[in-house]
Length: 330
View 1 (cartoon, rainbow, N blue to C red):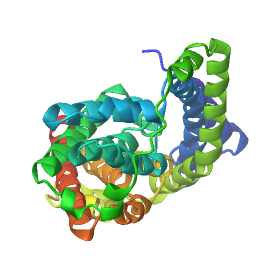
View 2: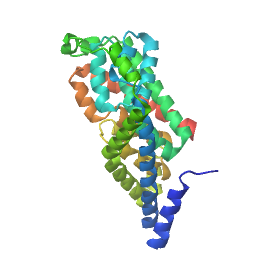
View 3: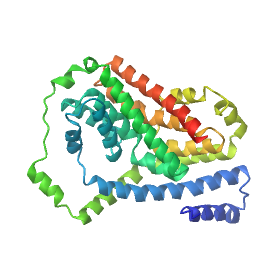
View 4: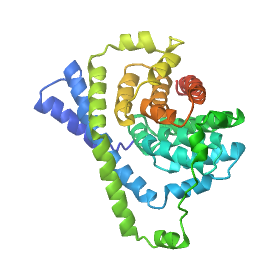
């Protein structure tokens, strides 16, 4: 079968064996090959896919996203919000301000939470790295379960009627939305493809510049795990025989902050060492959906009771998804 990443593998092998004179079976040789293979592969995918996503983003505006969600109710609204979260490449740093803007605009609380969960967890960087490291099947499972989690958690929060635990100032803010006028729509429609490609190029450069240290650092840690951490150690403490491996991984991931670009290569190394894929991906989902900076920002607009319920529902959902991942992908 054709492997588009074969040139990276071949080059890494040549450097390790011919230039450094190391065996691929040695600890150092195995670690070095892992690092030299993954860094150019992941960065190349980031450049290409980020360019495509950036070009697509020229058709979207945060204000339009808010307009799509405004007025949506119950389960249908949660589904729309989760799907919009997939196609809008906004990370948690922009998803939280949008969350506040959605509430100001009258978007129901549960629907807003569905977007908040989906947008950062199923973002373009996560999908790129998952596809590169684990293939299309795992990526599709991750996207599917991520969307289901976003819909379910948002729907449950909506049913509980928890608006009383949103800070009062949010409701008091004036709805000073600058709706896109017909002239603005005309301008957006007149953007040339050259300008869209230029935006895609800018987006690609911006993303790569912001995440490449995390990619290299994460791959370096993954390389050390791959080459030096005994397989028996991983299997003993986080293998399929430990029924508590998934909740432990999720609980450890909830308070942890790490860029998704830095976490994903580590997950690859853990999987290669024998940790079940569901356990690793549930840890990744916890880090992504419940990052510490995101919780700090949300604390400004949500009272502790609502924040705790949000964390609890999402944590339980991710644990369940981890067990499902392990069952389906075993």
